[in-house]
Length: 113
Length: 113
Image (cartoon, rainbow over all chains, first blue to last red):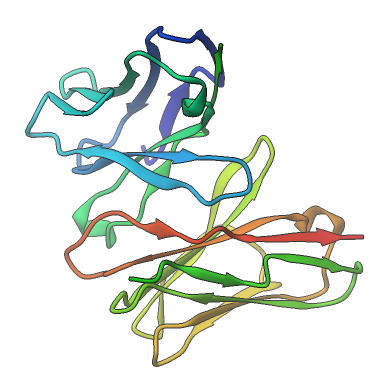
């Protein structure tokens, strides 16, 4: 019940296309869903996050879509650029577990020029 | 505002030795978490310290230990190193109480030979 399942494991998208990464969870007590971006040799960096009281959050070219009933959330990268090539992690957290993050397995995204 | 600082950045150790890694969190952050990252294994949670107390612990053997000092700086120790301990060790800090999300350091790349 603590798991967060992320797919796909890897993704290749043409420059200018839309990259979509999906995550699913079981525990309905989760109340915070962040996405992290990691470049080689660096630690993950918070990209965008959402709470379950909203269905969508957009920051620039990055959008989180959240479906509470399906217990799924996804990251959409519009107009994908080669600089977006990185590994993306979804995660989930809840207040009564001291906000400890439960991580997805990661998606390696490659944007082809 | 300085980020999370991890030292050293790279380390090569021999099997059987022990190693200590250091993490200085963002000023004012009281929670420090440690993760092990290996190719194909994603982010594996080691432990979390908050105000010098271990608050959460992952499923790692007792060879992995940590501590946090009164200034919130944290150290992680691995004794009797094994080849499989070769990984990127990441430290993340957060303000702790009532807040979500972590800020990661760039990690320490440990190679065991």
